[in-house]
Image (cartoon, rainbow, N blue to C red; front, side, top):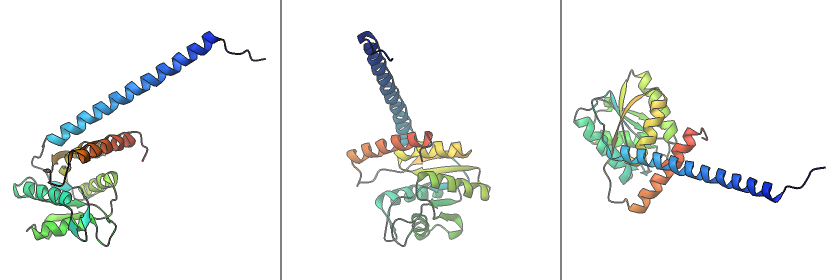
Length: 206
C-alpha cells in the first residue's frame, strides 16, 4: 500500500519544483539577453569588405515593385557594388503572394539602376530566411564564390550570419539604412521575432 506523502515531503517537492522553474526562467532570460546583444551588435556594425558577391535577402514587393524596406536593401547593395565591394549581386526570395517573386523583382530593379544582367543572379524559390541562406550557399558553391557580403535589415543579420556560418560559408554582413516608414514598436517586434526565430533554429524546431 502506498503511504500518503508527509507534509515535509510535500514541501520539499514544492520547493524543488519552484527552484527548477526559477532556474529555467533565469536561464531563458540569460539566453534571450545574449541573443539580443548579438542582434544589436550585428545591426550597427558594417563589415562590408571586398568579396566575390553581394547577397540581398528579399522583402515584400508590391505588384512587381520593391517595398520601401526591400528598396533600401537593394539600394544599399547597389552602393556597395558601385564602390567595388564585389562584381556580382545575388537577389533572393520567392513568390510574395502574386505573380511576382522577390528575387526577380530585385533583379529587375537593379537592372533598371544600370547594373548589367550578367552581374546579377536571381534566386526565386526560397520562402524564408533559412531557405534563402541554404540557396545562396548552393549558388556560391556552384559559381566558386568563396566570400559573400550579406545585405538585409540590421536586426536580421545575426541570424543570417549564424545560419550561413553553420553551412560553412564565409560571410560578412552589412545592414541597410533605416527608412522613414519604420517605427520604434516595429523595431521591438523585429527583435522579438529574431530572438524567437534564432532560438527555434538552434533547437531545430523548423
